[in-house]
Image 1 (spheres, rainbow over the protein chains, first blue to last red):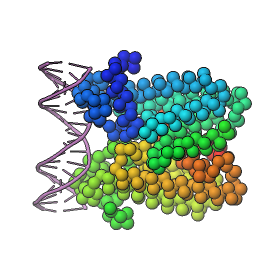
Image 2 (image 1 turned 90 degrees about the horizontal axis):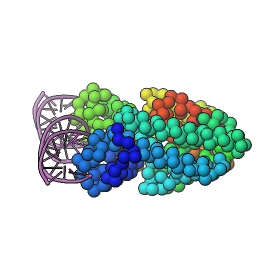
Image 3 (image 1 turned 45 degrees about the vertical axis):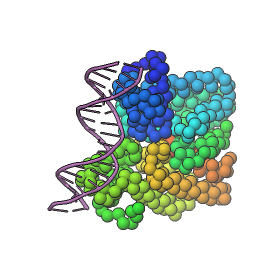
Image 4 (image 1 turned 180 degrees about the horizontal axis):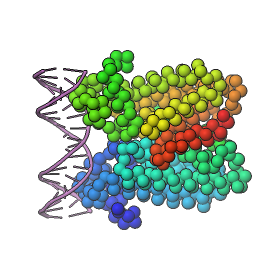
Length: 194
Length: 194
DNA sequence: GTCTATATTGTGATAGAC
DNA sequence: GTCTATCACAATATAGAC
């Protein structure tokens, strides 16, 4: 399996294109030909960098997860309150959706889960696991500092936050609404008292 | 476009199969051959009932929405409190997920939205619109009776409820968890005070 | 790294017999 | 309503030249 740090410029452009396509139409909705057209090269050139579609898919998710985790680490540094951290977290999803109403990459792949190659599925699980762990620790910190008094465990509350954000993006698409995700975030924060 | 009331026994079995397949692997993840194998007939027989895949998809969503709305009407009859109504509503999603961890049909199609035929998209929007309208009216009734004092508009709160349920199913799949949706529901109800 | 050419299989769809 | 046969095309993937 190709490692992320070894991505050549061409491979990077291919991963960029595949990422956008998956967010738009899903893993089963894009083809190597679509990627080739976006990048501006031919189909076999894609195979030169990523022999199988499953391998390309896995690398796309790995890079997405790595970038996401970097941003989460940055949020913890920049924002010192639970409220600020959660709002920055939600903004990541808003920013993603604002760009051509793209879904969270792993929201899309989570939905398609049963139709995905096993290695891609593994990477999706990893993304959700890391996000829930981050949310849990941030919420736990907020509880310790008295910034929130949740009526359920922080572990379960973390799942609500992530579910609401992923679901909010999905709803916005289904409804063709632009403000849908923002409204869900607004409701979520007023409900959990932030 | 074929009407729902005219569905012959064969057409019904085809729609059943297609519905399950879409919930499992999405619109772009199933083929007429898959449907044929599930039903136990040949591919061209499917085309006899549904000339195009887009037409089949639209009928699947129409029937799903109609059934869903019937159950919502029943819930309003049987449950007289906001709490009971919301819990029954959530149970619809739990029951769906419990069956082979199937996604909400329109949750899946909402995600795939940008890769769907326009007429299928239209039906998905209709499903979300009707669900949000039902939730809004149920929540509004609860406010009037003093069963809840939301810190945001009932319209926006309705979106949170639906987003959390759709997102909860998606999370459960991505995580390979069975209790994920139940936990999200638990957190949702404790957050909105029900 | 990229290309042309090709193999192989899958997919949505049609024609026409039973 | 269902079948066999077939079409046109798109998909993933490979071979080998440049």
